Amino acid sequence: MNARSLGCNVIECETRADYVAALQAAKAADRTTVVVIKNDRLHSVPGYETWWDVAIPEVSELPAVREVRAAYEKMQVTERYFLE
Image (cartoon, rainbow, N blue to C red; front, side, top):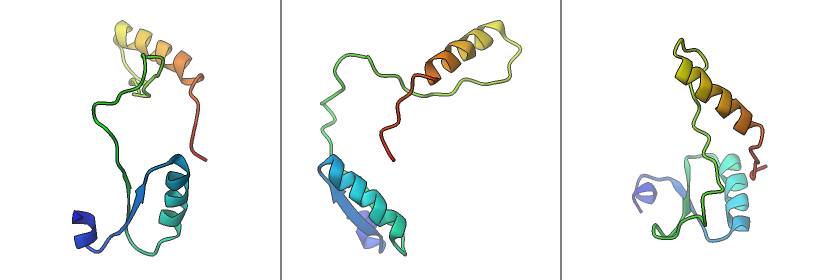
């Protein structure tokens, strides 16, 4: 409602198809567009087979940081992209 009150175009999504359509509409819009995805904060992903892409510094003199960066680069090649 706040975005609407400021004059933004607001698109609400319930499904993945809604989200894909909303992204296309937002790209084509001539004004600021807010895509709203309602979710349940208590519903989480099952297990922890997921991997969050939080980049590790590329340049560091600390051996521990270099080790973590190497592990990051190894995991990065397994990333899957879900948006087109």
